[in-house]
Length: 278
Image 1 (cartoon, helix red, strand yellow):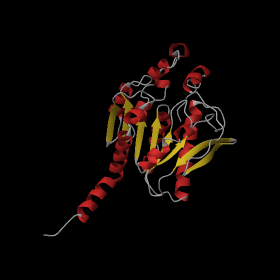
Image 2 (spheres, rainbow, N blue to C red):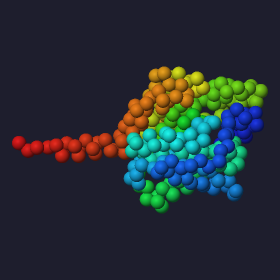
Image 3 (spheres, rainbow, N blue to C red):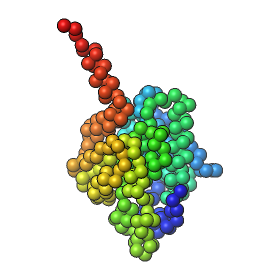
Image 4 (cartoon, rainbow, N blue to C red):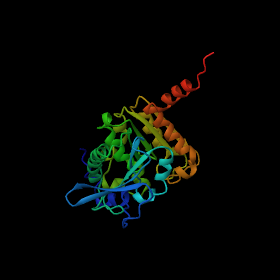
């Protein structure tokens, strides 16, 4: 695994991670809470918003400053689109144990991915598997996709990070003082160039934290054979769903259906059912 010792300098960590602590919140209807041990004494919280056992499954890595209960109103919207959404988090966020670092975030993501897939299989959730990362979550999502292409149908990136230095400087990190270079960073551009599974990248045109040009760079370097790129007009970093509205979920579902072959299957079935012999 990449050495993140420079990024795990306290001055960098204090800008990158903004953990919010919370007691366990009440479950929305149809949701399940999971806690997964990633190292001795450390459990990471996850919340599974369920549509159906046969629906496609997204393991979701959220943005900085968020916690899983922030998705209690959003998870049902994914469900309405026919998608199971499993939101996980980072050490120290919500009711998860520990203190976050970049290295531990990626180590935990690897364990979470494996344990979640096993849990889904054991509980007979048979739908296709996707990885999705929003903002900071794009780091975990892209990193996982480089190693687990045989296990997933696609990668989805919302408001993702391409280069580390522009983001670091935007959030107030003195990269010159810390001696941080792009080679020391998340390396999302290099990693996404190795990902060949279907990839969907979308971003807000007015993102004030991570410029839309970062998404363009991820798209340009993506090694996916099938890839889609959408910029939502008027959307800022934290208003993608509000600005996109129903089209946000319709576009996401269209991508998933295309990748899983559902669209073609439904079209063939409709044609067969409507056929009338002369």
